[in-house]
Image 1 (cartoon, helix red, strand yellow):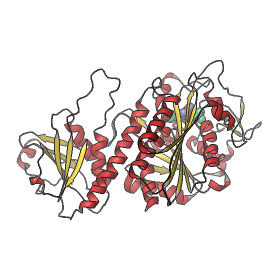
Image 2 (spheres, rainbow, N blue to C red; image 1 turned 135 degrees about the vertical axis):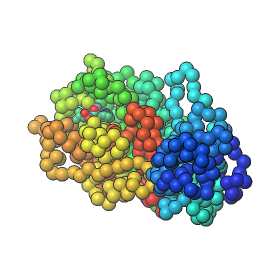
Image 3 (cartoon, rainbow, N blue to C red; image 1 turned 120 degrees about the vertical axis):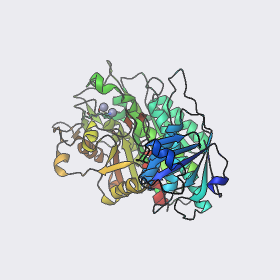
Image 4 (cartoon, rainbow, N blue to C red; image 1 turned 90 degrees about the horizontal axis):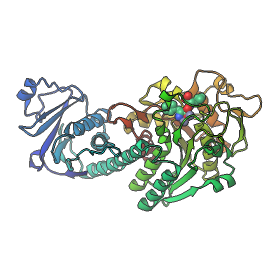
Amino acid sequence: MKIEFKDKKIKDIDAQLELVFVVGKNLDHRFVSDKKDLKKLNFEGVADSTCLLVGSDKLYVGVETTQSFDLRIAAAKAIKALKTTAYKSIKVASYVEMDAHSLQAMIEGFVLGSYSFDQYKSKKSKKSLESIVLSSESFNEAKINSNNAKEAISNAQAIATSTNFTRDIVNTTPDDCYPKVMANIAQDLAKKHKLKCNILKPSELKAQKMETLLAVARASRHKPRVIHLSHKPKKPKAVVTLVGKGLTYDSGGLSLKPSDYMVTMKADKSGGSAVLGIMRAVAMLDLPIEVHGFVGAVENMIGGDAYKPDDVLVAKNGKTIEVRNTDAEGRLVLADVLGYAQQEVKADYLFDMATLTGACVVGVGEYTSGIMSNNQEVSDLLIDVAQDVSGELASKLDFNRYLKATLKSNIADICNISNTRYGGAITAGHFLAEFIDEDHKDKWAHIDIAGPAFVEHEWGENPVGASGAGVRLIVATLQKLAQ
Ligand code: BES
Ligand code: ZN
Ligand code: ZN
């Protein structure tokens, strides 16, 4: 989809349809030229409601305020409302108020809202909409600087198309997207966007002593991969390492999941897929930050060769782990990939992303990620970005010594599950913390995206299925570090 800015009044722009946001139910704004018809149709401008008037070729969309969070969702609803129509081009005015990010957010909404996943449908949905023109004429007479507008467009395009890229990977079925396929995706990405890419195969994983990762992978016919993508600009302002859980399928292993819980576990690669999407955006934006993306791509299956509850595994950092549940496999994979990532790169920030626990979804709800960290500044950085700019929701979950103690093992250094049924997201975070070295202790945050990564209904600007959780949050964080 082509999106461009024109330094022209809205009436002087040529397009098949004009999109008008009705802000705060105000039908008296000068942009609302069909007040009578809207009244007849009982359209009041309630947030996210839409009204298409084909007579005047205008689409009206309600939005509560012109703040980013609201505009992004309303823009996505607008695009969705046009999906079944034949309109090819639309024009829209600039809606900017107190919030400088709202222009970018609106454009993100257009791109995010246009997403659909029909790879497995024999009849593909028709995509008529080809272009969107943004006019410099503003909703509240604010002066729109054309450079700022152009930057907002390129930021939004990079971020939102990369989010859609991640959504595609996550939505792809486990039989079509297994570790080797994820590695291929990473290599293609590297070629297209001038990233460095290193793929570790089983022999190299063995040489690197990543025995816990290999144990989880053992029963699958799809051999594991560890992916390392890097973006290395000259004179970077910071070095950031990202680690993603890439379980291309999580059956639970011998601690097999009940059938109802197994469905959607193709999405257990969401953290790793987010890392791939973030690397794509970082390269497109050519951020002045050195970014390393690591993905542990593994399939957790059953079989005669499967790892077992009662096994004791030795992680890359030498710690021994008593396995009491093979369904707590993500933390085992991450333990080794975190170890490898820290060995390879001394970073200023280390973020891991994972669909790690059902408990996180219970705790904060399905739309919100859980942030855990030893360092308040690091967690605040992520929480603030989520609230102010990214469009994602994130809540902090605090560590504490009592929950940490529930991971004690009688026979090994640590258990892979806790001995209490409560606080499961936090105990998983405490487990990961055992695999963070002294140098990175205060630089690390764990992001549990188990809820928002994959939701089986539409919400906000997100479609049914994969949302691309983590991509916008981390790219916005990196942009903040680049300032
Ligand atoms: N991949 C799951 C977590 C998950 C659950 C993600 C629901 C998305 C939605 C993870 O590997 C897992 O199975 N965790 C267990 C941990 C338990 C055995 C301590 C869980 O959450 O039940
Ligand atoms: Zn699991
Ligand atoms: Zn899992």
